[in-house]
Image 1 (cartoon, helix red, strand yellow):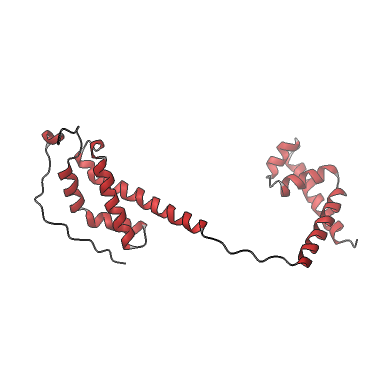
Image 2 (cartoon, rainbow, N blue to C red):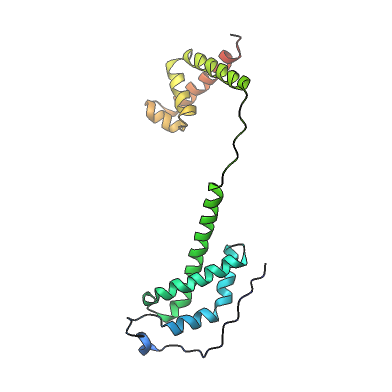
Length: 191
């Protein structure tokens, strides 16, 4: 989408020299005139930078104008006038990131539709499956049960399970594989 920039009013360019370090009794930093001229000269490129990061023209214009305001209020910190454009660019990037974060957060906070409720029958079947799983788990050897619980219910890696139980990684794999095989047999058997 093309970005249209307002044409700034013509004003004579004034580039400060080293002796122009103080303006209106302020400490050394970028002068208002230099900042304004830099902004006017590079407005379209700053707008293009914001357009690469954002998706609509209005947001791009807002970000670029806000960048100018922020750099203007912190111009004393821009000690080298040659870095004014770099400060403006970095501020545009930072403000664009912030705008995107706000949008993402807004999308996350939108009300989400309620999930479909399970029927009473589904709930009963789930409970039966849970009960049969618990019964099958109780029928496993102690180490097999420990490995499966830590691996699949506590969501640990095999290395973490080995460290927690104080056994080798190979033992974790062996107990896990034997435990799953025993669970399959127990779960498939008629009750």
